[in-house]
Length: 171
Image (cartoon, rainbow, N blue to C red):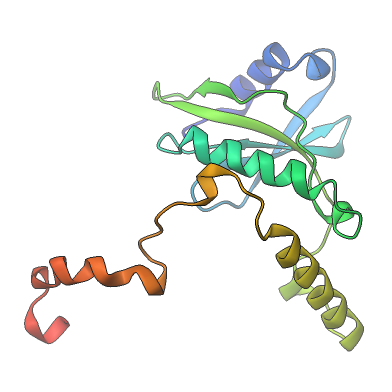
């Protein structure tokens, strides 16, 4: 999405009553396909606004919300899972007239693992958290979680039908 921050702030205040009378500022976060901004209120980082790319499926976003809601019920991982703040997924129209879905999550302060001094304690802690997270992600049961993922290695048979688009020395 192509977004001007001052338009987004105005839109956030109009669409989320808890922002209406607050002094908001935004800090752009790195993202692969979406636009994500850290929302600061009175210069304090409190929320993240996630604006999907125009082609994102509402079903996938609802599944992500369901996962966050479900994981926030789990005592061992709850402190590491952002909370869903929005009550429904709203749409934002960007500068090019494209509609994108918007969600608001709590911000969790942290450091990038790659930029942190590593220790055995840190690596054990991270491994334990990932184990708990993996266990709690099993069998969540949302219908959108059961979908075909073409690039998953065990599902790559479809490539046989398209292999001829490559020259023989590229195969």
